Image 1: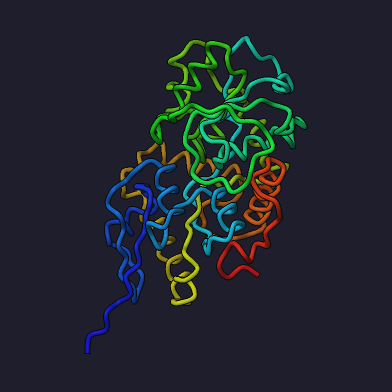
Image 2: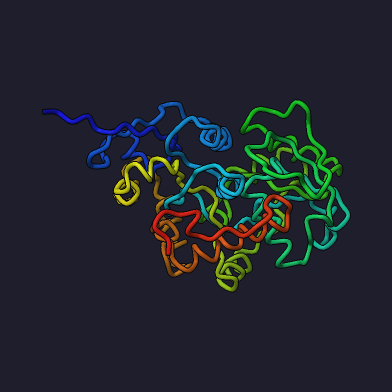
Length: 328
């Protein structure tokens, strides 16, 4: 007698660390994985997952916390596709801003008010410079993925917003013109967040004098080590009904992603990328993509929750066991 395997649908990024799963070279014993073949921008992917398109999906960490607080029956496993400091994601127009504290009272732009990168960047400005969310005026260029509460600040928005993935250049233009004094944009996480490079700085520089506000490698590394917080951007989330119906599945899925990570080098990772991840591990003294939930990960998730409360995106602190499968 043939037993039909449970079919699980997934929405994943086309990332080398999960490519072996997407290609079917690595699977989950006892289950049929059905990965959506259409690869879209991360914001659109997170939006689709939170609106019920897949059983499992990569999701913005900040949006996931808000969705769980609002009652969506979701959990996560410690598979992190994107991590890293957000300082380099804060841009300004050279010559128009001498010190971060000058942002108080000024107009600050972002691609989504509730985006994880933006939450982390505002959290950094709060902890490092005591700049509160309510200290600035807010401009948003893109479409939100999910916001669960009324915001404590007035937000100016583009209507209609540009498509997902096209929000950055609008911010660069307004920075160059002096309409905005600072802005947070997505991209260039991981080792690029520590050491610089990537595609975002040259793209933003299409408009005169637009560049990252923070570019000191040693200072960024020092801050990360001092705080013990290494921002978590995107996590792998599951619908709670999948966890309850198939209790062996989350652990098996985590193991499968660990195996896929080990196979990543075979999937279009060039020498610079491999060297960048190795340098990141050496500097931090640990592998931020080990897919574990240790003290660093716990501290980082608690900080993300705290920042969202300060920013009016959440109202309460959620126990970690309400967020991740198997956390005690």
